[in-house]
Image (cartoon, rainbow, N blue to C red; front, side):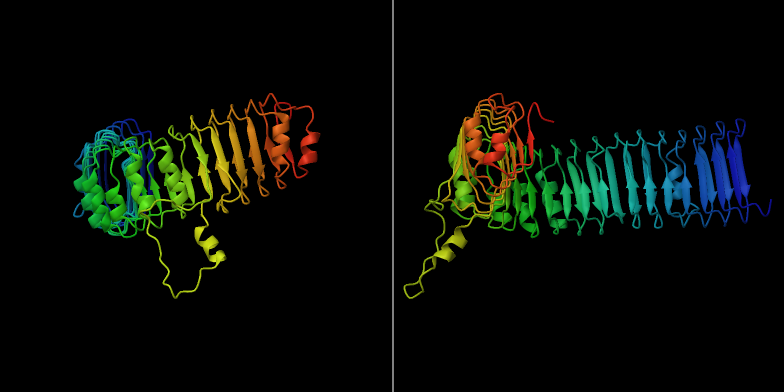
Length: 506
């Protein structure tokens, strides 16, 4: 058949061997030939080869100088030797795309290809070792490779890689000059990691509980452009590892949540440019652990701080809110030691804070400049589920001029809220079942959530919203002491109301 260009063979139950020599054949598809065990093809014209669902195929020989695309999905009997066919010198010098999905007999995949761009190994559940030396590889799919223990990508052209789907991975080597994003989330037994990615900007190593200091130090040195570093639940990382972060001059986000750290000094010393610090559920941090933030002005560029579910005490929280005026977003969700939030007008009172001293001959500082300097940048305050907080007061004299969102949802012991906030847009007091006193002077408030505030009275609510001239949405669902039959009174005291949510109104 000297002119044959395309061939498709499907469901040939007795078809056991395929041997082809063709000068013009460019496309071959063979599918569901259950006894086919040997394929040998020689063709300088073949560009695409599809051998799907060949459950007996174990021998493959290819001499195809222009072959670009190969699909061997669901070839359950293929052995590790098939990798030699697709490596340099194996007969497919221009191969760009290789699919080996669900080839469940593959235990070791070693590919050395200078031409390969796309590789899929999805569902190769028996694979425990993966070694790729494919400098032009741009895409790799490892979904379902949940028994992979050792992996080497040296070198590869990948720009991103997700290995969080490989829970048994313990040894990792990566050399990827173009990689910017690496996800190792959930690699719980990963203990050895050599990562050499000079362009890496984001590394998520969440739940890598055995990742050690030396691996972090090596990574920090080899990947100096990292901006986002997530080490949540990396409980084996200690002070030595954190000290290596001084190599990361562009580090903006650091997540140390769910770790056992007791000392943050390496972070304060090594990361002065940090913008976001997450310390959620760091149960072993004490108040003194954060002293440098509000006493020494550490992390002057910090705009977001997450202390949710931590053991930080009342005094430290008050000092942080008072002194760290650059903070824009503060999360205190589930803080059991927070008993009240009363924001005063005084600046940070700690004597250790650096103070600018004016020379005797300098001009007096104008009051507007003082106001501008002391203006706090806080916009979002989250205190969801703080079980012991009883009072929140922000009086008019404070300088929280940018505060636009407060969330106190599920703070079941909260009894009193008194807010004078000129820029507040959203206030969530849902499920504050002890709330009795509500005083608001918030001219820009548009959304007030009071779901299941079972102790709140009619009169208290009317008085509160009377000074919220922009209020549009009010949720009083499951508030038994609010008269749901007469909402006209609420619209009289607050004409801007557009939507009232209650048990009787949908």
